[in-house]
Length: 244
Image (cartoon, rainbow, N blue to C red; front, side, top):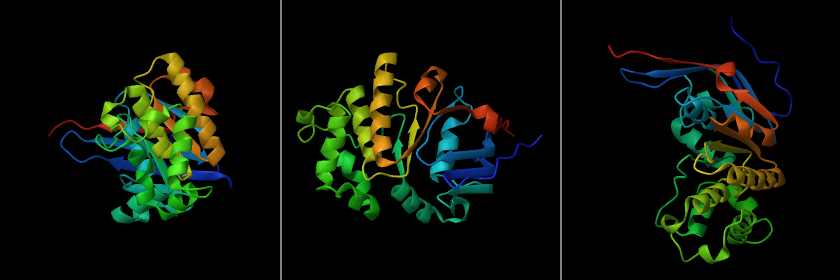
């Protein structure tokens, strides 16, 4: 039986309805999202076991891939109707992404990494410089997230610990106040106390910027820090096809 979303409210920043996507290949993986909405400023945890399509869901949400059918609206823009290059620009403007493996530039400085998104979005660059310079804002974010100021300029990110790299990745996602922060298992390498401390810091900065946060994880126990917890299998169906 097909499930339908309630009518989107005025505060919904993301709306998915009857979305379908299939990765190509002999053993292809497909994901169908019946209905999903993300309110502006909300903190949502999406949980599911490994291999159930969490990363595919985030790739759709961010416009890294486009659905083959259905409606995927972000801030009123249907991403399915945009070209690949236009989706890239839209993502740079409105999304901050914390990747599971962080995806930092290994030989760039901490500040270089944090300010990188500003090279792709004039709006975020202007927001970052609202109360000074963009570098001032990068330093403020890193300080708020607990990174030692001595590491900011003279160290490449390859020399940092996992916890330090995590903070750099979070500051990079937050800079310029994008409307949506997307996090793909960013705390998986940390113990529980460090996980919760990191989430508290991330949420404090996201709330200050007015950014919504959606994070995927297999750890439902983190849900106490979020406004809402959803299971992926409640809103989506994943299928794998056998090789021909």
